[in-house]
Length: 63
Length: 63
DNA sequence: CCTCAATGTAAATGACGCTTGACTAAATAT
DNA sequence: ATATTTAGTCAAGCGTCATTTACATTGAGG
Image (cartoon, rainbow over all chains, first blue to last red):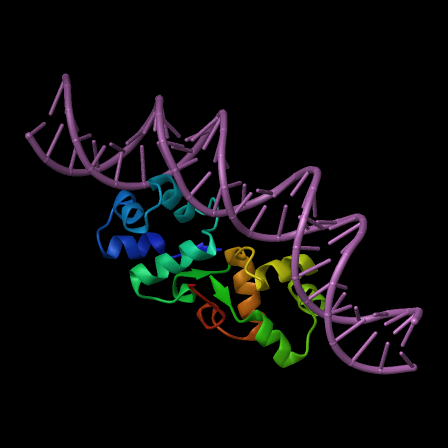
């Protein structure tokens, strides 16, 4: 899976730390998801979609 | 997370085994997801949405 | 009644999501 | 020059996701 997290974050001028706090996960988790180390769990994907007010499909897609 | 898998499966008259084969997971995984034992991974959620030609949000939602 | 498909559950195991802590490197500022 | 912020990464550890194998229960049909 790939994702648009880095762009969405840049649009809002948020650091990985900022995003991590809003999602209530560690900064390393945000970094790992952004850099494609692993995919978020489904509940976390929902929280991300909620935060950006988008659907999961608008943020995540297949490689 | 809750989901509408059981209903979607019933609408198509598929057994858990049928669905498992289409998703390429074990029957027990389908059962566990249906009965709320755990949530699917994000890639599996995408495969489920693709199979039913719906968005993830139309199939899964918060408890 | 007996059989068989479908479902639910359980135990053991391996893989993955997420954590904390620590370290490096680049850019910005003081 | 030194300090700070940001991003990337590594390692160890924990809990959850997902697997296989196996057994029990239910309902429909012969």
